[in-house]
Length: 468
Image 1: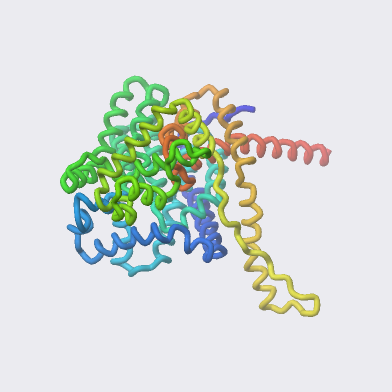
Image 2: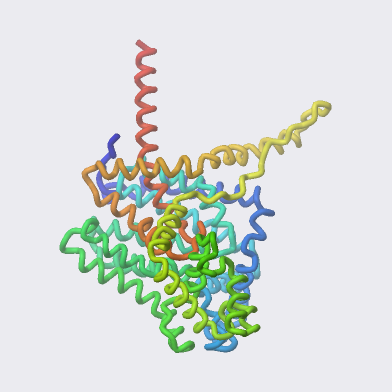
């Protein structure tokens, strides 16, 4: 098995990219709309309580109360306002101001953004490998049930992925084109934008910088590190400054790491030796009991939100110090769990089958035809399981490792390595690590391209033999 080498995209006319990008965009949009159409009832209630919190903040901003939006009702004791980054609430406020409180409008916007992410999966693969691999990667991202499903949840997770993909694309383009300083600074800014939706990517610029000796030539390494980090810092700084000004604490983006830290430890504490709790409700109840404060049972971050969060971090560190090797095993097991694909609701569309005593009328036939795309998509999406995707990704890693361009493999592994290392100490859900799986689909496309090419060669040889 070999990996096809190719010239950079800079040698490809933008017009030649327009058609594949447009096709992938339409495919991604169609898939996500179909998934939404067939799974409305299953999707609507998911994380509705968390969504309600974002909407409450958005309403405050939409009515023009900027002070309350930035500070909350009772700072610094009530720290609920910094429980999450404000980017998603700002987006919702903008949508509310334009079209009113419409879940349909929010989902359509998220569907569009996620479909644009598919194009960047294509473009990154095109830069690093080949056009055929890029097309396969783009199609995989467009069809992925996991990506489609998460784009429909009224949460910021899928929106945080697009800036990361844009940043990765700009970094790899900066390697081969002029004006690299602008691209690198913008890439850092995009990583900062991602943090306005989810804080998980806070240290991602440092990971890109750590891989610079392999990805970039010697004269560009220092420039890359400085520009990437500076771009990210400039975008994240307003959040940090707000937190210092309002809460008199250095909090780079938001709270939340403490409670996910404790719950992440408890997830693997099957024998209960640590005494830690696995859910937010259990954590609240335990804190109310330990501190003899019944008011602690109502909210994770009110009252005394920052002090309680720091106490959670300290408690987690204490547990790790008492069982360091056990926790190392926890991190390894959680990192392995991130490689599993999420089980999402299957498309519920299947053709209507008329009864034997009924004739197939025009309306029934039209109904069956309209369900055919859903049935086909359901069959295809059943292939997106860990047992299929993970082995193919590992084969892709092996093939790229054997190629003569190690920077390609190293670059495709920057984002996955970041999440596997930095997210593994904390409680993790699939929606936290969507970006990881976007890059895994690029790796999957490498062996699939080889299989497709061999099948084409076999078919060509068979056809020639038949004509002779």
